Image (cartoon, rainbow, N blue to C red; front, side):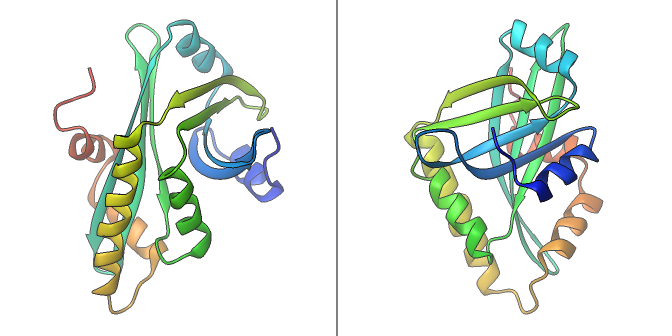
Length: 179
């Protein structure tokens, strides 16, 4: 699995990260979710066949909309991972990535260890309802973007992260829980 050098450098510096990137895993370009964690946790989750939960959040801020994909994976007795991957709705590259997510029938999730080696790889079904959720999230973010006077995606993301903890984001995206 080839990861761009800039993303490799970023991931090396992170103990945990969730990124959605376009990659070619052998059958053409597709959106892939990379989860950087430690090998022991990834292997424990794999052994437990832990469920993966994904959901979308669109939030308006003073500097524009924030669009993110929330990721949760966990199993009692093993541990839990949770994080988010952000998209810039004004950036063509991110819009193309979201377009891929809205059309592909599977979502590859690669759990990378400390050395950026694949510790667990899953190809999750990505059914029509999940693809529709991508389109709806993008449409909402675009509507908010049209009403934004001075869009700054980094400032918007920082504002959201100051306003809401990861637990609060999870509660908004999964109000009925994931279990």
